[in-house]
Length: 494
Ligand code: ARG
Image 1 (tube, rainbow, N blue to C red):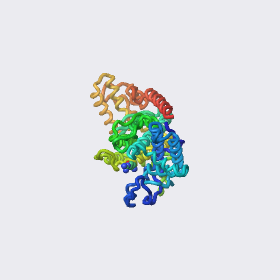
Image 2 (image 1 turned 45 degrees about the vertical axis):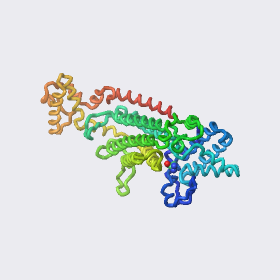
Image 3 (image 1 turned 90 degrees about the horizontal axis):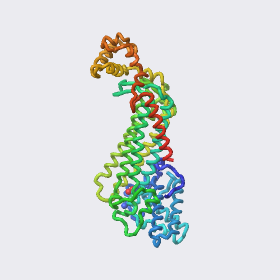
């Protein structure tokens, strides 16, 4: 396996080197494009982000060439090329957005730089040495390989960020394991729940996202290199060597499919889109909870900004932006599918359009995950206000109906009786907890003194003692299971 020295994250690289004028850059083929066309078709502004993957891909390729074709690529030459590629990686690590590009795309840049560097090191011979690297390879299988490696790297980084958010949610659930909280449907007060139960709902959603990210990485883990332009190569290469050097699970079965397949990119962006949909739901809950009207949580200055005109204000900007940025990631998914649609077999330059959608999706989701992790870590539940709202809105009326069912009534009959109880109480402005047995008995004779007990919030929550329910015993077990799962994720990720 090829390990590069520790370097910047695949996702967090700055968006683009500051390239004012690409017109003077070279191409690998020596074509002299009109500057306006070159500026339009060049991808170095964004695909330079692939440099670590491109360098790794080339090292895997040259190692395989040395093993399979030593007469064309002697071991010593391969070692020289590998060293120069490693040095180029470090060079770009350091340059970042100040990178001075040599070619139209990252592949050209790395190759042109390699040839120049080798020529410096071995005057009269180095350039030729570098020119051997592209034996049995096309940019078509090269870029497909780079993008797959990038997807695998990015999926691992995103998984780590999802796990961090899960940890923050579990930490908050652990802080208030038995605090009650209003549960809503249709955003109307529905039934009381435990706050921890609500937070664990997000942990479950994120767990599915982890699975999707893992499956997206597995989809990407198929080596295209060796497919060359579209038909394979005339050299007896050994693709399984390249695959194992680069950490791919398998090699592609059809060269034509391999150079034009970007399904794996769609899978990763789709995983990002659904993750972003989940984050936008959590963000929306935070906005609501933090509003004066709900008043269920306090806003920490770590993630809520003030207003430039209204001195009294603090706004949940982070959460609002997460709602807003969901649209951007959904758009990328649509854009990617539209780009892939109708591309005739095999590679078409259309496919270059996969990158910005992919990079920005991952960067956007990663930013949202990080910001919401901060918001979650600093989240302060207003325990008393939450308890008050949990009891409001006749939220335990279902418990009263269930009470009558235990006394032998059919549920629908019990429901009708309790509905009359509630309508009357609403008309008189009396909360459910303040009703007397006499009040209840006016609507059904089966009510006894213990019916008053059934409408207490703690009793209502505790009664939902089914697997997946909100009773403290269930939530405590769920919390323990989620913490254990988190430990496993952490140990497999490390
Ligand atoms: N920048 C190109 C891309 O991202 C690299 C492959 C170019 N291949 C070609 N045959 N022009 O797709």
